[in-house]
Length: 362
Ligand code: PEP
Ligand code: MN
Image (cartoon, rainbow, N blue to C red):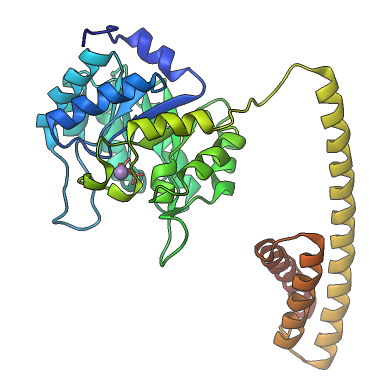
């Protein structure tokens, strides 16, 4: 295949600013043939803006494939030369940054296991000083927004102008539906704190499996993410890392075709008027809910006074179970999930305990 385009800084920025931005490629670069064939097949879909591949793999336990290392970097250059697709890799040390820049890697990303460690992030940031390369920062494996924000600040302080965020979910103990719990509310909060910053979703590492990949990708698009990073492999079952979650380039093409791409906004006045009316109704209801919650807490305080006078404990387990059971039954009739009812009543209950506590210890 002839080279289609020369990758230069302008092309990389053009891709970076495209919406939706699609990044795909194998979890790990394995062999030259695999890298090149992946690139060619991704290029054929016509839908991939940037190709990803892991060169150094942070693995939870030793003994599994830890990445091909620097010798894989020329393979990526070759893939780029053949397809014109810019390349992204993960970096975790100063030496890796140096090697990546030496081999003209176009976009770097900081992995979830690096974002947790300010020493490592600082080392990477220092190595990036003076480099003109866009950097993506994955959320830390633990649900701590401050670490994620800290990594953004460290990289920004090193003078990197183009910074993006990747939401890849948070590690949780035990078996859940997901490999990494998405905790969408944290992603939404991160987006709120960095308006305008590129924000993409990584369904592959959230799901850890193929069958729910599309649902998670769709959810991300519905939540106004700017793009997706999805792992793809020429023979997914035989991948040297993350085999269960990878899909072929062709399947990726089909998946991207079936996603409903949404816009944050439309120009139509009628749409805005209708939306505004519904939003006012919601504001009204939210105000009423808060009024009612305020009244509820006043009653809790009266109960607190009564408990204080009679020297009995705040927490009454039976009463709490009754409240929850009643709420589940009612919630079910109203179409409110058990998960929501549990969280909501937990929050109300805690607030109520705090109000009673204040009274009892006054
Ligand atoms: C990866 O993208 O292959 C990777 C190692 O991801 P994470 O840092 O999100 O675990
Ligand atoms: Mn992976």
